[in-house]
Amino acid sequence: MTTKDRAYLKGLAQKIDPILSLGKASLTPEFVEATAEALKARELIKVNVLKNCIDDPGTLAVTLGERTRSEVVQVIGRKIVLYKRNNDNPKILFPGEKVKKSAGKK
Image (cartoon, rainbow, N blue to C red; front, side, top):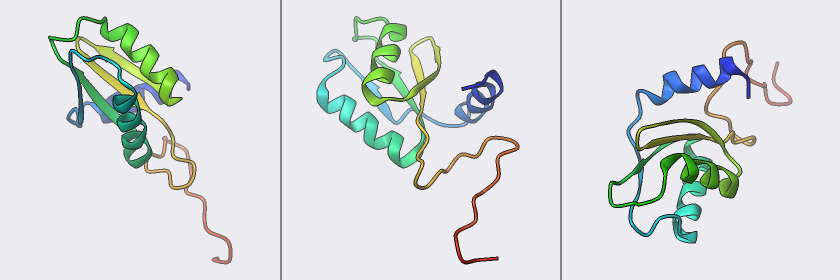
């Protein structure tokens, strides 16, 4: 991911609310699975790390990124922004990227 791509995703992430909250149970297999499903559906998600979670948000972001095979866009305070491109049906197009036309149409 280039610096420009990361900056573009950060701009998009400002407008979205966290859809998952990570609590005192920390990273459970169920939470990782829910995160992977959310990434598949939305591509860009924000995760809130609650105050009762004793783990460091930066470390959690790296681990969650590895387990979901996603990119950590940024960690600000107790918020984690993750991105994973859906190759079948991409929802986020980067500047300069073109939509692929389906076969058979002109």
